[in-house]
Image 1 (tube, rainbow, N blue to C red):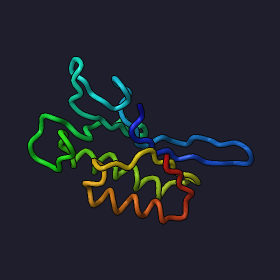
Image 2: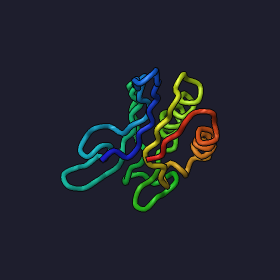
Image 3: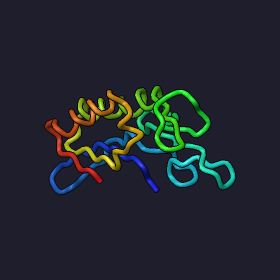
Image 4: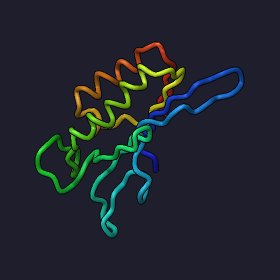
Length: 128
């Protein structure tokens, strides 16, 4: 299950060219889910353009915004997720695809501001 996908695509004539994928979860055990045995312990995010990886949320944390039984790792969301949104607005993409904007992401004012700018910007946006 892919929880997030933010891609930049360039279109030329009848071809669509994937120029970079910038924000997707790690492909471990269920596309972003991290498990210890059968228990889900959190969610990872990865910036494919830089290879940077971090936590979106973990169960074993006490400080930070709580969504259900998970605590959002705001620092990683900012440096990976928000940075991906910022790059999508500055790059040469004609189309930005966003798969799932959920409650964990919405805990970040910076994420909310940047997703609003992406949605209201001059690029075509597809929400999955």
